[in-house]
Structures are given as structure tokens and as C-alpha cells.
Image (cartoon, rainbow, N blue to C red; front, side, top):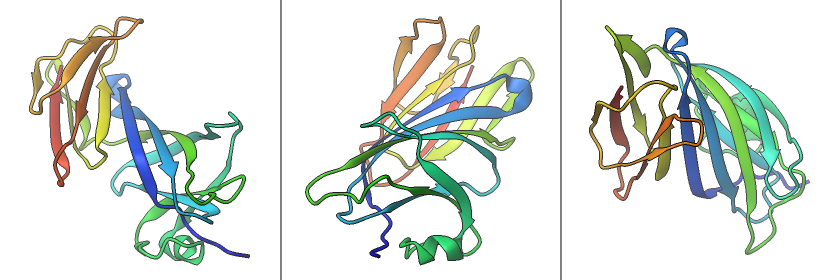
Length: 181
């Protein structure tokens, strides 16, 4: 059969900062696979973070998708030509090939523990992470207020009382985001 890994468009990532003592945050990543004929989707799992995949959903049907965590060699076998041999990837089997002039919308729900990206300094929390996706939001834990943000952002109150910091990266480079609460 034809095996290909999908290219992407229309990415959005929501980071929900969990209890600061855990140094953990939930990542809800919405993405559209757009490569015609692609039957696999690969998501890079960032080095230096402990990662746990909670679920992967086909957004059109709402059904869970089959996934596994693979090394770069396995990702290359299934169409990700740029896979690095020393990196882990979330490999997702699409329910059907991406149709020509179409998209396959996915939701990846995973949790990272990363002391370098999310930590405390005294009584404040710090989220310091380079973000390459163009549309992002960071949700502070309940009870925290935003005290510093190094990038232009929109601040909104969630229905449960948490603050959401949203921004769009309009440039070609990653955003070295630094948020304190």
C-alpha cells in the first residue's frame, strides 16, 4: 500500500498548566493533515520532556484513533522522511487516506512533565518554552493571575475562573514565550 506521513496546516495548541508541584501541563493540539494520500500522521515528542499521550481523536467522526510512540527509524518507514533517529514521535494511523484538496482534522491530547519549561520561583509560577505553532494559548492554574508575559497576547477569563493567555505568532521564527503568574 501507499504509506505517507501527512503535512499540516491550521495548527492550534492549548497548554493547560497543571498543579505547579508536578511541573506538568496538558497539551491539546488541533491540526489538519493535508498531504493527499497520507495514511499516517506524526507528531514530534519534544526531547527533555516526560510525555504521556492521553488520546487522539478524529475530529470529523469523534472516534479515537490508533497510535503508538515510535523512534525516528520507524517514523521514516511510515513516510516521515525528516524524522530524526534520536527523537520519539507519536505515530497515528488515520482512519482513511487524506483526500485530494481536503484535510483530516485531528486532536492530540497529551501531558508533558518538564521542569525546564514549567517551574516555580518562590510563590510564582513560570512557563518558559519556545513555541513554533502559529496559534497558541496558555491557561494558568485556577487561582493564579498573570504577572508577566513577554509577547503580545490577549487575556481572557475561562468559564471556570482560570485565565487564558492567547497569541498568534505572525513571524517565521519560534516564539520564546515567557509567562509568570
